[in-house]
Image 1: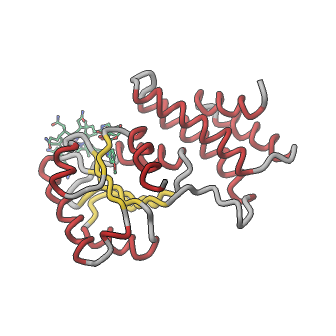
Image 2: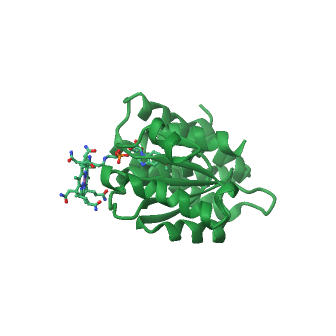
Image 3: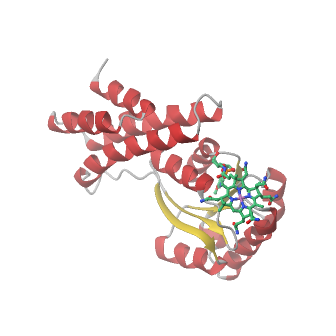
Length: 210
Ligand code: B1M
């Protein structure tokens, strides 16, 4: 097995020290940082995403896999040259106003990072205006909105309306998700996409930027 294939396996296993060590070895051997990201770290998280979707891996394992992926990213990111961006696109993500749930949203953010996106996580309990400010500041490709309460679902629609009123709605694709959210609801409020889990969220975000 090559060192690159080893990185994939160690990311899946969530071996933080192992991923860091292998990444450093590949760097020392002259491997391209962008190749290490694409063929090692992101490839590993792709497998993790697929297994999570099929219930073959669970939340704690995904979190530790993401941590190991970050250990490698920390080594290679500073080495990327100007023309060698690691980012396939930018996603601004957050949980709507009145809602404090962030475990699922964090997981989605990590999966997106694992897929090579730059993720700006705005946090929780976000007034619609904060999404608008973030779109103006970061010019993302995708805005991700999460809600876990039936009572905060209307804030998703409010957020989309506020983005429209601010004149920035058409600059971005909007993805919504969270346990009570459905494709039907996403259509109703004018979102561009709905994802039931982090792996689907990365697939949709990839479609958005391609
Ligand atoms: Co709350 N809570 N909670 N809670 N909580 C639920 C959601 C609830 C279903 C529990 C229940 O009653 N059975 C219920 C909601 C009922 C409803 O609205 N129909 C509920 C309630 C009522 C409340 C309070 C009102 C309780 C109270 O105080 N009386 C209160 C509200 C606080 C507030 O937000 N204002 C409250 C508080 C809390 C805690 C703070 C204690 C804690 C949150 C801690 C935190 O997030 N940091 C908490 C928790 C942990 C839960 C449960 C147990 C677990 C949620 C979770 O993290 N799931 C939850 C019951 C349950 O779901 N079994 C519950 C794991 C996570 C990986 O899944 O978040 O679904 P999930 O995310 C998934 C997908 O939904 C999707 O991908 C993720 C990964 O697969 N996804 C996206 C999520 N966001 C996405 C965004 C995307 C795409 C996909 O694109 C942008």
